[in-house]
Length: 554
Image (cartoon, rainbow, N blue to C red; front, top):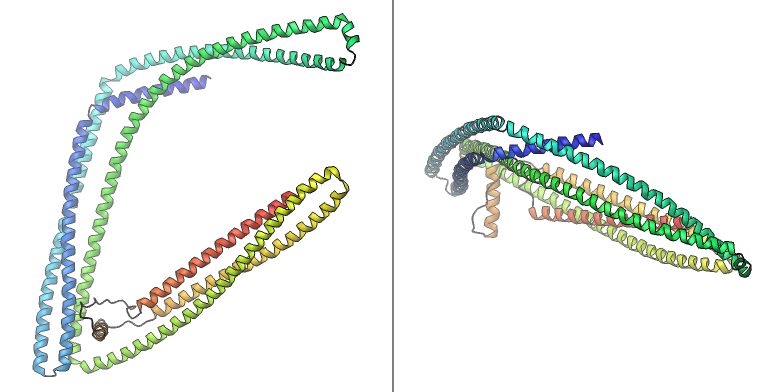
């Protein structure tokens, strides 16, 4: 009890100190709010500037990509015209036009690189300015907090000491009252226990007397003749009535005392709870504000880091575009001088492409055949599962019938003890047969699970083989791929915009076939998942049936 009293005193002291600190901090919240509004305003301004710079950069990159696609189309047209017109003057003019266009494009790229560098420098300078301002604001905040703490420590120490003294005096008074109430309650509990023991004793005497009465009813006349026994019974009844009256009085007094004690304790605890709730709510509000500020700062840092990474990525993309452009420019004179070699190489590559497409079609047919086999196998498994479910339903019905038979046999046991032995033997035989059936079903389920695992392994193996074959495709030249794509467009007769050329090695794959393969794989995965779920359900049902049978046997 002394330890609990000390803990209560410490809690009261801490609550009073927190209340005083909250009152002192409320006076200077206006200044902190002004600083926070300034910070938010500066943050919004810098974020708007960064977004504008990003938009400008994205527009310029889009324009560059459009110009590159146009130049590629022009190059292709010039190559076609060079094949049709073999005069050297036309070739010279076309080469001059190409060189002029390449020079203009180089100038544009250099200009964009300069602008990109300027933008990076501006962003770095803005970030430095932002960091400097953040450090300044944090230092000013710390100074203000130190000043507030000094003011609070100087002005409120005396008031705190007086309030602590008053609180300690009230705590001591309350503790004395609590000890008195506890002692009274203990005394009342002792009296209640004593009265209960007396009531139990009297009830035992009453039960004895009632037993004597029930025994003596047979010899009424002889029992009534003896006057001493009747007098004793009357005396016992009088004693019981007196004790009942005393018990009622003591219970009423006990209820009154308990009500007074509960009302006093409830009032004291309600006051303490209200004070504690006020302090807790104030502390929670301050804590929530500080947490929100910390979250905002962390979010701002993350956004700045993401923006920096995006800008770096965009710079790398521009550098890669410039390098590719330089390579393509270096390839132009070779193409102009060696048209015959390029045409022969083109024919060879077209042959390779046709052979690869044939191999892909063969693989697709193999995949479709395997898919059909797996679908047939899955249908067989589903039929087996249906059969297993039907058999389980029949087993459940048999089990219910057996339970009803057991109830009937239990009813007949009371009448005929000889028929019980035969029924028990019959039930044991049926239970053994059911156990054997359950074991066979479990074996079938294990077989089904093994087959499903084999299907998974084969599916994974096929996926790996397909990925290897896709990755083993040779890397084609960019300008040759453009020619092949444009020939396909001319054959179909589509006069729309040309497709953008990519440098990935997997562009010769038919996307429709790839999508169909992915869809078939997803369907197989979903079917295997459904089969696994059904197998799990069957296992759970079998386990439940087994447990029920074990319970019935026991």
